[in-house]
Length: 378
Length: 192
Ligand code: SF4
Ligand code: SF4
Image (cartoon, rainbow over all chains, first blue to last red; front, side, top):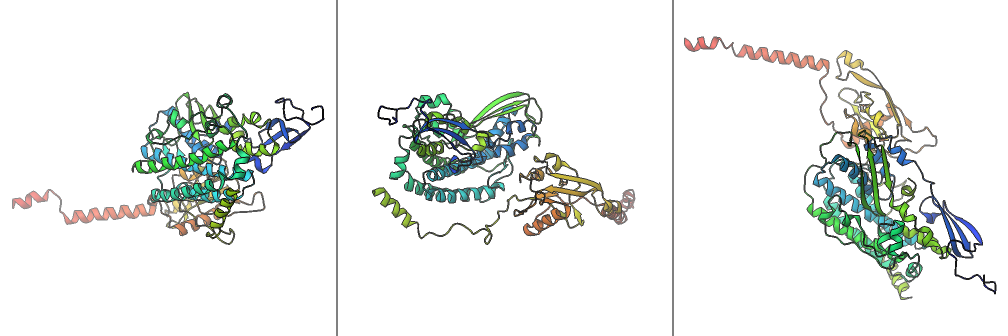
C-alpha cells in the first residue's frame, strides 16, 4: 500500500498482500482436466498460488506391480491419454532394453510413424485448446476435425481411437493395413493444410499475440532447474530433445530439425508446437520411404519375463521427456515401475510463472504448459 | 485492425465448406475392419456349438477381471459328434467393466472369442451390461455373418469322423493291396 492507499504492482513474490483467496478448478474448463489452483489475489494480481493435484489419481504405479507386462500396456495408454502411442513406446522400450531384444526394423518404423502422428494429434489438441482458453473457438473446431482424421487412421490400424494396446514387447500387435502408406500420405497433405490454416488464423493475430507475448516468461536456466522438458523447455532457448540427444528407436536415421525458441513466453511455447508438428510430418515422410516389408514381431515368449535388473529409458513425448524406470526381479510383473511424467515436471514451474500476472493470464499460462492430468496424477 | 480484417477473410473463405460432422444418432460413421468393439463368443456352425472350451485363459489374463467362465463335459464328444472334450457351460462378461483391450482375443487358443463391432450398449442399470453366454454368442454370430469371419485353423476330426477316416483309410489300403498283388509274387512272375 502506498500513502494514497492504492496497491502497487510491486509484489513481494510469494508473500504478497493477498486480499482474496479463490479456487480455480477442479472442474474449471480451462484447467484441462481436474486440477485445482488456490490463487491468492491482490485485486486482480496473483500473489501466490498453491496447486492441488490428485483428483485423477488411480494408483497406476502400484497397479503396475500386480499386472503382467502385456496388461501394463493398457494402463500406459491411460497415462497421457492424448498421446497413447508415445506412452506405450516408453514401456516396451524399457522391457526390450532389459531383455536385450532386437526389434525388427519394420516394427520400429511403424512405431515411429504412429508416434509422430500421435505427436501431431496431441499438438493439434494443444493449439486448439490453447486458443479456446483465450476465447477463440474456431481453431479448436478445425484442429479437432484434423485430429479426428488421425484417430480414424489409428482406428483402422489398431482397432481403437485412443486406447490402442498396439505395441508389444518385441514389436507390434499386427502389421498395418495394406493401404497404410497411401492413407498416411494423403493424411499428411491434409494435416499440412490444416496446420497452416490454424497457424494463419491464430499465430499472428493481434489479440492472440497481445495475450501471449511476454506472458509467463521463464529463463532457460530456471527452466532447467525446475526440470522442464519438451517444447516448454525449448521455448526458453535450451535445445534439448531426447530424439536428438539420445536417439532411441530409429530416430537417428531421419533428418529433422528441432525448433528452439528464445523468449520463453507463452507465444513461444505455442509456436514451437506448430513448428514441431511440421517437423513430425517430415519424419513420417522419411519413415514411409525407408520402411521395407518384413516381420513386425521379434521371437519372444508370449509372456515377457525380463531378467533381474533395472533400467531407465526416456523418450520424447509431445509433452516432454517421458521416462520409465523399471526394476525387475525376473518375474512376470515388475518389482517397481516408476514413470517420469513430463506434464507433472512441467507443472512444477507453475508457481514461478503465475506470480505477478493477472488472473486472466493464469488460464493462458496453465494452458501453455500443456499438461494432461491423467499423467500428472497417474 | 488489419489482422482482424485478414482473419475475417479467412472466415468468409471457409464459410462455403462442406460439413464434416455427422449427426450421431441419425448417422453412423463407417466402422473400420479392425475396430475393437465389445468381445463376443463365436459359434461353430459346423459343430453346432460354441468354439469356446472354457479353458479360462482369457479370464486369467483379463486386466479388469470382468469375465468368468465355467467348463463342463461335452455331451457331443461323448456321442462322437464333436472333437471338443470340454465345452463352455456358463460365460459372463461385465461389458460395463471391459476396457476393450483385446487381450482376451490375443490369448485364446481356440478362435473362440473376437472383438465384435458392437459398441452401443448404453444401459441405465449398473449391472445392465452383464451379458451371459447366449447374448455373447448372438453378438458373435452377428459379427461372423457381417464380416465373413474365418477360422484360423480347421477343426480337428471328431470321434465319429475319425472312425470314418480310419475306415476309409483301411478300405483304401485294402483296395491298394488287392490292386497290387503282394511283392513276393512279382519275382516269380518275371521268372516265368
Ligand atoms: S474364450 Fe478362448 S480363452 Fe476364453 S475360455 Fe473360451 S476357449 Fe478359453
Ligand atoms: S477386452 Fe480386455 S477387458 Fe474386455 S474382456 Fe477382453 S481382456 Fe477383459
